[in-house]
Amino acid sequence: MGSTFFGLNTALTGLTAQQKALYTTTHNLANASTEGYTRQRVTMAAAPAFANPSANTMLSAGQIGTGVEVKAFARLRDQFIDVQYRQQYAAMGQWDARSDQLGRINQVISEPSDTGLSAALERFWASWHALSIAPESASAREAVRTTADTVTAAFKSLNTQLTQAQTETDAKIADRVSVANSLAAQVNTLNQQIAKVVNLGQQPNDLMDERDRLLDQLGNIALITVTTPSATNGKVSVSIGGQLLVDSTTNAVNALAVDSSGNVTVGGTGVTLTDGSLRGLIDVRYSVIGGTSGYLARLDNLANALVSSVNTQHAAGYALDGTTGNSFFTGSGAAGIALHSGIVGSLNKIAAASTAADVPGGAGNAVLIAQVKNLNQVIGGTTTTVDGYYQSIVSKIGIDADQAFRLQLVQKGVTDATANRRDAVAGVNMDEELSEMVKFQKSYNAAARMMTTIDEMLETIVNRMGIVGR
Image (cartoon, rainbow, N blue to C red):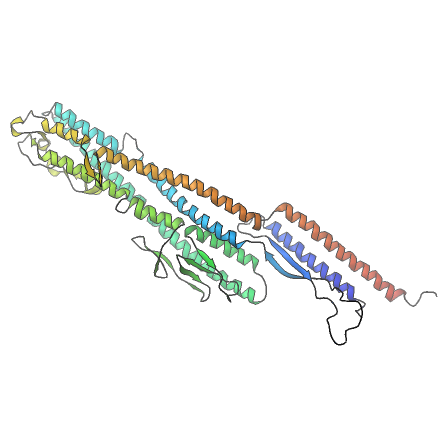
C-alpha cells in the first residue's frame, strides 16, 4: 500500500514541472528580440507508476500514477530549414558583394560625361578635323597635342580607378577570410563547451543557438556544409568545398586562405567556392575587373588599338619639319599610353600632310587621322571602332552592375522567405507564449490546490481521527 503522504509528492512533481515550464516561457519572452534565439519547450512525461512489478507486489488495483517529470528542455528548430536558409544566405552574400563593388565601379566610370574618356576622344578627333582646315596653324596643332594629352590622362585615370577598386576588393577579401577563420575558431570553442554540457546529460540550448548564429554568419561568407558526426556529444563539423574547416573529432580548425591569384584553400588543400560573399569578391577582383576579359584588359585593348591605329596613320604622313615615320603616341596599355617625346617637344612633329610636296599646307594625313574614329578594326577579338569598343566597355559595366543589383533583390526575396519559414518554427511568437503562460499558470495553481487538499486530508488523519464520538 502506498504511503499516507504519497499524494503530496505527486502534486509536488506537478508544481515543479509547471514551474520549470513557466520559467522556460519567461526565457522565451525575454529573448523574443534576441538574434538567433530559438524558442524552447519543456518536454514532460508521466513519471514511472507505482508499484513496480515484483514477487511481493500486492494483488490490488494498480498501477497508480506518481505524477510528472521533465524529460528535456527542447529547442524547436528544423535542421532541414537551416540548411536551406544557409544555402540561400550564401547566394545572397555573393550577389550583395558583386552588387556593392560593381555599383561603385559604375559610379566611377560615370558615362556619358563631359570629363570622361568618351568626351576626351570626341575632342581629340575633332581637333584633327580642325587641323585639316588650318594645317599651318600653331593653335590648331596645340589643340591636337592638348586633346591627345587629355586622352592619355583619361586612360590613366580610368586605369587608376579600376586598380584602386581591385585594391579595395583585395582588402575586403582579406577581411572576409579573417572573419571566416575567427568564426570557425569560435564555433570550435563552442563545440567543446557544448560537449561538456552534453556529457553531464543536459541540453545546452543557448550555446547551440550561439553556434547556429555563428554558422549563419560563416555561411554568408562561403557556402558551408554542417554535419554532426556520431559520438561527438553535440559537436558539429563544418566543411567548405568538401574540406573540413572545423573538425569536431579532433577539435581542429583548418585555416581558410586566398592566394594572390584568387585560389582558395582550406588547410592547404584547394577548394572551389560556389557561393558566398567571398566568392562574389573573388569574381569581381580576378574575373570582372582583372583577368583576360576583365575591365582592365579591355581598357588596355582600347589603349593599344588607339596607339596602333593613330601611330600607323601618323607615321605615313609628313610633319612641318619635313620628317616622316614619326609616332604620335608611345607606350602600351591604359597605364602606359603617353604622347611621344617628339610631339611633346615640338608641334612641328605633328604630321598633317600626306606627302612631302604638300608641306606646309597639306592636310590630307590630318583628314585620314580624323577618320580613324570611324575605322573598323579588330579590338579584343571584336571588329569595331575605337569609340564603339569603349562604348561596349561602358555598356558591359552598366549591364553587370544592373544584373548584380537585380539578382541581389531577387535573392534577398528568396532568402527572406526562407528566413520567415525558419522563424515560423524557431522564432518566439508572443501570443503563443502568453497562451502557454496562462496554461502553465493554471496547471501550477491546480497542483498547488491539490497539495492544499492533501494537506487538509492529512490534518484530518493526524488531528481528528480517534476523537470522533467523544
